[in-house]
Amino acid sequence: MANTLKITLVKSPIGILPKHKKTVEALGLRKIRQVVEQQDNAQIRGMIDQVKYLVEVEEI
Image 1: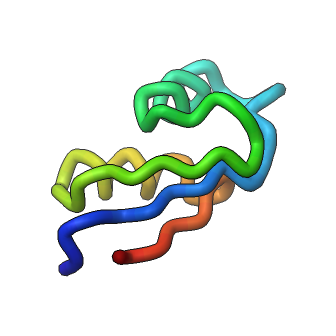
Image 2 (image 1 turned 45 degrees about the vertical axis):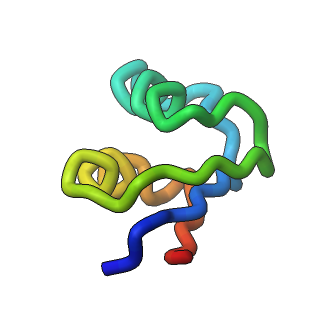
């Protein structure tokens, strides 16, 4: 596993489940095409798996 993940929001969270909307915000994403870097750990991987239809992930 890489040490860092680059996460990009590619789809709008408007109209999705409130739980998934909070997950996107907890990842640090607010706007479409915004990119954040997060540490690669089990918690972040679980959050990404929950909203994988909204984000793109790249291992750094």
